[in-house]
Length: 384
Ligand code: DCP
Ligand code: MG
Picture (cartoon, rainbow, N blue to C red):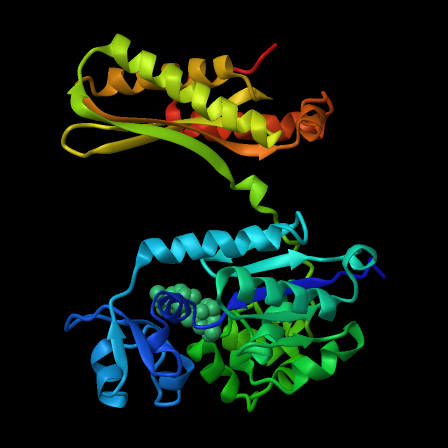
């Protein structure tokens, strides 16, 4: 058997409403609905008080108004939501480096082997909840399980404002009693098709002969779904470092026409990005350019470096080359320039990537191919 994993799925409760309540405590305890308030608007989220009346996310606002006319209706504060989200993720980062954000208010944490450091999973979950409540002012619910799938489903049972743990030996029973719709990936159509086979629960789905399921749902998904119905899921928690980026940009008070000046600006932006990159202790594999023309057409391009780097020159040389290339395709004034780096990783790990064994070589070639595919044959050249 493979090594036992402990995965958390953390999801803030009624997130947009919760933020509105921090901003205006008079909303606490009332039915509150956040979303598009116009005729064609939809509900972003509803407080649990409003959910009792059948109001839910993605519902037309007109329906919500009929079901819960006495609710407080708000169009919301988007900037605030991302600010609160960042504070939440900063707390999660304190508990493990292996955090994968999957939406603005939701993340997976791989807590395997962290027991010696932090304690039993349930205690750790309560500690995360306490800190989120105190530092962010919002309730978070946490599901715990031996896989992402089980943790995600457990967090539904944890809501609102709780923890729900499914131990490895409990997985089969936990899954078996759930309706098929509870399995992420089974929508209303699949559920309908399964119902014609008299399959209502995940237990029935797991135990059913695969043939009829193949015919009902297609040959590719049937076996996979049956495994998932038993709680089998080997997907890993991909850390954010992979998708993380550092960027700096500037909008000019007057559009800039001089290419020399643009190159200068890119140099300065690159230094800013480089400084922050070095402070993070990471090396970057990609450098990106953002350019906005006076008509607001915005171009972003990216190059994969031959070797991951954290130096200003590597960043600015690449950004400047991207600028020249972009201007060759469309010359003219610009109103905004930006520089970014992404594909961040530990320097050591990155160096080993460049070892000349075939597998690693192919990984690099793959990256080069991908860039060439997008930017043309001479966009990147492999080092000798
Ligand atoms: N959201 C949205 N439109 C949707 C679904 C969600 O705008 N169709 C926004 C509003 C939610 C936030 O994303 O507050 C988080 O989504 P969740 O699915 O986690 O829902 P909530 O956090 O609101 O409720 P809970 O997680 O307690 O079920
Ligand atoms: Mg949520």
